[in-house]
Length: 494
Image: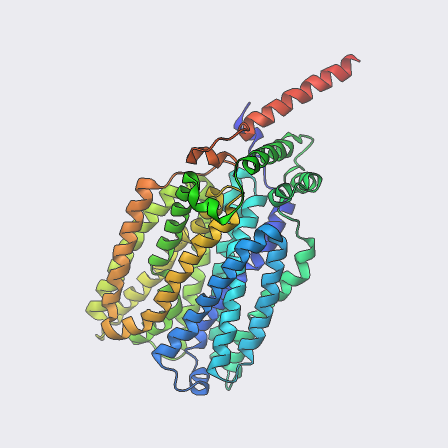
């Protein structure tokens, strides 16, 4: 049997589900990006005067504090309520958060709104990659699960351009409208969530087999008259999940007491940690300060932020197109080396020409800041969302993912709080930290990360030394095909 039989094309319904779920990912991008331009608006700074570096850090970092609690909640809700309902809850909370922030009358109210918004984003950031991983066929899982990062990037870009447009406004509209804009994706998700199917693996976990079969058929079963692919998926999922359920309980303790789960968790934490230690969010959140430090001012600052926001999603499209061909491991370590080189150039140029009148050198500095976003988006941006859910077994997927993402968020909180102070105290030398962390990340990935591309979520257990009681998808499909031939011949004989 050729490999082509297993690698069937992704149908429109699967794409539609993955894309719609990723609308919730816009929340992360918009909520993260909108603060970067909003806090630089003159009307905002006048309204909340005095807006000190410590208050600025609090406005940015408290968002991450809310995210921690949102991820914890999603770690429970995604298992007990299902991925679909958890996404809906996140959308409701995001809508409330947007209203609070846009109507803020003092800095405390704004920070409270940011915390609530972070809670919602934590839910989305944990649940959507899991959902898309579980509805995708194995050979396109990277692309569909990676839609989360793509929409985060699009949301970030849109937020930057909204900020640029509002820089031409006057009065409170300059900053209230961008904060209110966060409500839009939440409303879209709430309107359409009823048409989104439950994750078939979650349905099987709840022993709702008939519903799971119907969902799998609709997701992967409309390619001609051959239904062996979706039936093979169903049997492989069901039998392996039943076996795992009989061998281990889906408790928090299982994450730490079982050797294979500990290995999964360590890898998940490492990839999430290296994502933040790359320095990408330091640049994302404080890029306007970096441009001002290079002598840019006025509308030029928000214009640069808008252009910067576009390069990431464009580069991420390339990653989505090839991630299932390149693989996860190779892309990650090559990206780490490239980010190390780029950050070294940014540091060197900033130190040598940041306070000079050499506009050519400053232009190159800004160009390499843009290149950093491009390089990051070619690798870490999508892959850390793809890799974590797929290396977890069904029993620990939500809980293990939540712990890994919380580590990501905690590192982000620390950087968001200390970065304004670090830039003020040591300036360009702060970049040296990220030069070190990126090279360490590249070496670690090269040495210990396994490759997972092309395997079903059930087959990945073999990489970690776990018993897999069902054959791979191709063998299951071959068996089903042979049974259909025998059945056809017997019917013809009768």
